[in-house]
Length: 64
Image 1 (cartoon, rainbow, N blue to C red):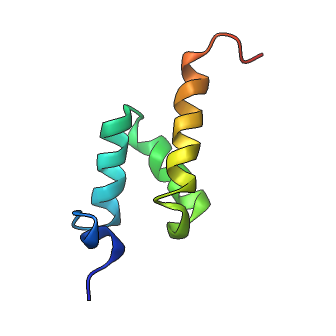
Image 2 (cartoon, helix red, strand yellow; image 1 turned 45 degrees about the horizontal axis):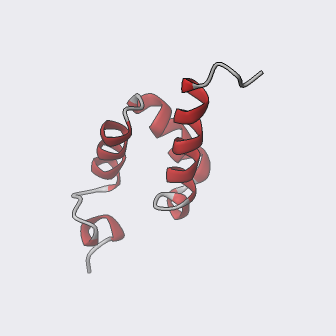
């Protein structure tokens, strides 16, 4: 039986997370730490949203 990662074209969760980091331009340690915090059930939803928020906050000078 294929994993959700294999169904979506990745070899493993780590392969998916590395691809996500590369695609979003966010360093791997940040992606891995957030993925670990949120858990696997959030990999395709909450993690992506959180990384989008993270990326936006890093670009903004007005976050204070």
